[in-house]
Amino acid sequence: MILLITKMILAHFIGDFYLQPSSWVLDKEQKKYKSIYLYLHSVIHGLLVWILLWDWNVWKIALSLAVVHFSIDLLKLIFQVEKSKRNWFFIDQLLHVVSILIIANLFQNGYLNIDIEELLQSKNIIFVTGYVALTLPMSILIQKFLMPWSDLIGEPDDDSLLNAGKYIGILERSFVFVFILANRWEAVGFLLAAKSVFRFGDLKESKDRKLTEYILLGTLMSFGVAIVISMLVL
Image 1: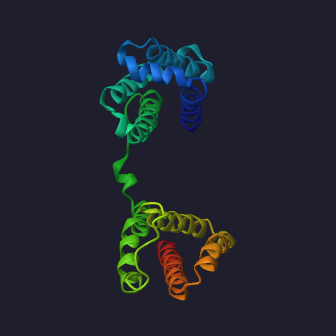
Image 2: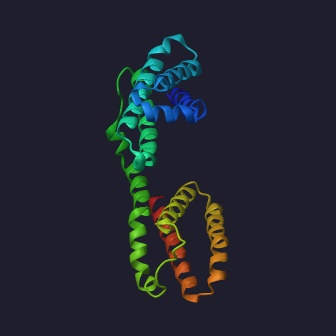
Image 3: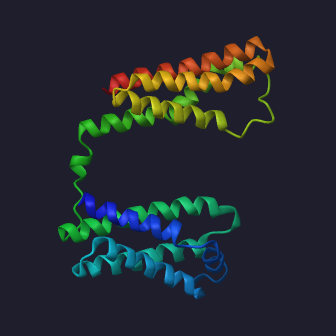
């Protein structure tokens, strides 16, 4: 099963990112279902799967994937607009991966075999709960905790990216979570050191003690919470 899924995902990456020129993408966006490249692109995906699996008997898998890939791409072309292209790119890729998993499961087992009870076992739920807690909920809690000091340092820098701090915090806690579960504590130290190096230039230029203390509070709280929750999960 794993080898089948891996080969199908490899075929997807090759077909979507290596064998699809920008001119094809533009033509599909302009002509939608009338574009010959929409059909050619889907056929290429089916052929890639068939070649990588290298077995004539898997033609049903290749054909199914080509048809489903065509349907997902057409769905994206119909509903996406200029402002939603970025969002539809991620939706499109997610749907392709899910379709690969479903098709592989169907042809491997003869039916869709998803054991919900096994997925909802206590071990899995603990890992999911720990990660979910470390992402957006902790961002909000840390923001609320630092609010008295954020008011003292004034408005954020205009040059700062929108919501960048929130996403940086989510990513760093996600890394800490994975590193601790993998028992790689040295990687946690490296991550903290790397962030400190990047922040050093900003703090040096600002010469603002309040900003320095504020950033240290936020960083140490973010890492501290990530370590505590990761240890609780373990």
